[in-house]
Image (cartoon, rainbow, N blue to C red):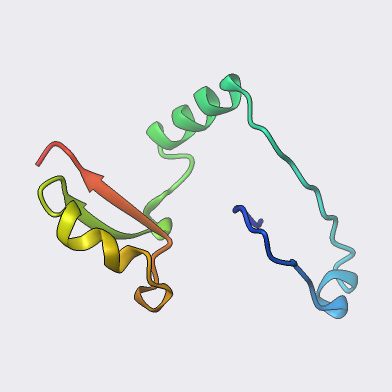
Length: 85
């Protein structure tokens, strides 16, 4: 599964795709029911988002932390801003 948006070329090594007879399915433009369904799956624990959330900050910390989130070397996948803390 690849999730993301890029303007760069995306390529795959042939043996990796050919050996398991993988299929590539592209999708674009999620609809409102898609978001409702995904949110429900996250809320009930079916989808575990923990591996995607690599960085967290408080609302007060956004100004000091945000710039580092734009740098690839920090390894950010998803940064969460906790507005409840």
